[in-house]
Length: 78
Image: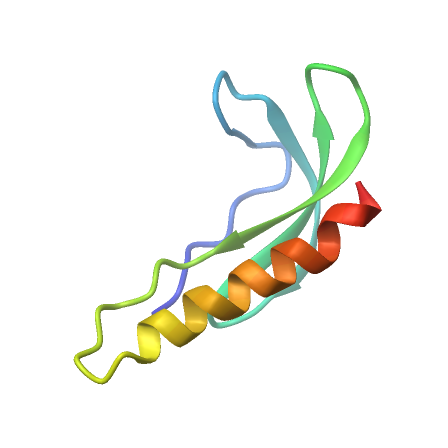
């Protein structure tokens, strides 16, 4: 399971809200980008994660739970 790396200068998000300025991390399951928010001009970091593949043993749920914990940990930083 991998995600495609986005090009610097490309846009994504609803209404092309984010413009990629740098790739901070390129891993097997996720990429982390430095982006500018076209709506307010602020620089932010966005993490794009590959969707887990359904697994009959339930390992996909573990990955989703881990991502939820990471999200809760990062919320105070916004």
